[in-house]
Image (cartoon, rainbow, N blue to C red; front, side, top):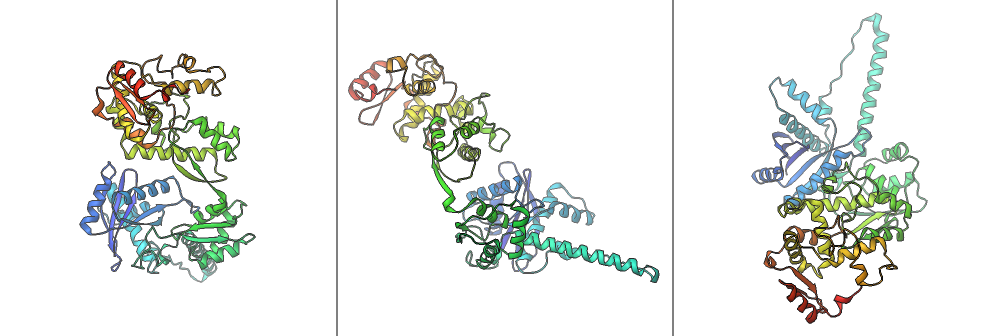
Length: 518
């Protein structure tokens, strides 16, 4: 089997290739991270007729994944999305760039930064191949032990030094084995691929049960028997060193042989399926409604309020807040989807998950650039999408409604959106104790009342879904001359150019819905 190895960085991606029958990794020119990296990698894969990738996965000194590890995993997901049929597996790596630079220096030839990355990729691939044949890695076999010489008068010193060296070697070997045993089993799985020499990510998960009262020793033995860990004793030691006194919860889990000991322990500390709940956020729901859902799921109202007022800047996804005024709420950013969370996940974790999902939708559909082409920044685009989400009766009308709003904005007309007025009243009088009828509601003095104030309201009025966001960024130009719309009693939407036509549509099609209380 032919393989491509990648040493993923934020500026460059080291590349190497090898044939598993030959087991010699050859570095190739590094690929610059400039937005075309996936196309370049795909081109290499086609040229070499390779669809299997080995990607270096960094960990810290404790064997735990880092921010860079998460960056690499996201890269791998996008790689599989960009290259149809791509098979990906991870190889634990640490200090490969240091080792790569050392090798290049020893060759006493000029080299560039990209050469270091590709040499690192070759080391990753060589380690991957040699670990899966049971042979020592190149780096391990290259280590040399210095002999200590001495005369008769120094024999005692020689013996002591030799013992210390031996203890050091044993300790290093023990630590190396410990780190190795924490890594995913991967190659021991034969149900993943017709080629049993390599385990490919994407195999079916294994159902694993932790019975009530089971000890760590019993759980370790069962994990080893299920081929989910490499060494029972290492698992037990890791629990004592890193679990912080937390216990493994009984329950049913879905595990796989691409999970490290750290990942397995983390899942079991949080708990099995009994400790998971589903949270469905519908497009068009408001922050107020979502807060109530979280409270109904058992979260403390004070914790909910604190989380929704927290600062989420400085994150990988924080660019989605471009144009958002300081102190503005998260209205518009809690992306509608069905999520699964552990019951002990914090509200902050839930919010961050929805923000990350929104960032994916915006990036994959290039919405930021498309909103800018319409003359809106990202925050304004999300605001318009939130109105479209509430105004249109179905997704097929989103783009048309968006175009009508653009027509009004560009003509300096008021949006005249009842749903923005409804939001304005909800902010101050959700129970309608003061604003008891539509006439009073439409007179509310609020910047969200787009019947009174021109332009977009100061922020989103709901959390729009993907379809509304895309429609607001790509309006339907077939209604470029229209300035009015309404949803009829029959559920259909009617569009008109003039106010006279609009009033006639109300008479003909909207005798009930047009009188519903805001």
